[in-house]
Image (cartoon, rainbow, N blue to C red; front, top):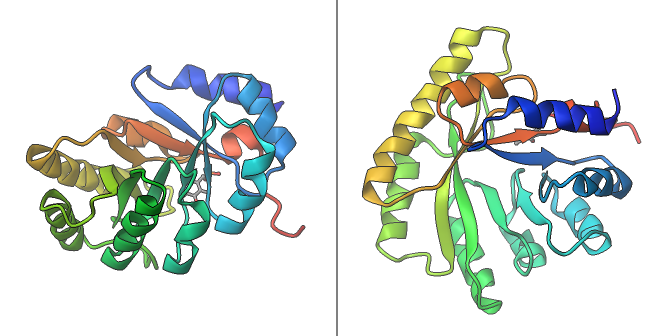
Length: 219
Ligand SMILES: *Cc1c(COP(=O)(O)O)cnc(C)c1O
């Protein structure tokens, strides 16, 4: 199937209220432009270096989301243009994002990445830490950051119930924090599990290979 067929197919499967983040990591600028020309404006990358290379070559109205682990010393490279950092996983990182955003007189949208997978995952906040950080945000600790929601990844498994359980856990945390201060985005679900994520309350999904095809990490 062509990128265009893939893209239209995914769009048709998403309810109107669900945002699509097209995950373009490892794919060339030409493929991103092709999806842009079909109307897509929100793209996700997981590496700062790759994003910095692609960003100047593509239309300025793309909303770039960083979805991969971000080192504090790299925040400065993307602070001027990044729309949303979905992978905020420490207080130190959020402080740095706020500081660097301040230099551009802007606010950067941030999602707290929460560890929900049963499998060992390197990155992500424990639920308790996420709640603590959100309280600090409400108390004004990160003036140039706007925490707009949560992001989570389920265990990589065929067990639908397991995936459902993990997504539902994050939805509960989302509802709880949303009582304290209004949140917009619950980012859960990728190519293989986005329908389950939507069932569990996701309103933003991050879809890569189902649009762009499989990734080749050997080149
Ligand atoms: C790569 C990636 C995706 C997209 O994965 P696909 O299975 O290709 O849809 C989504 N979220 C994160 C955090 C990723 O790193």
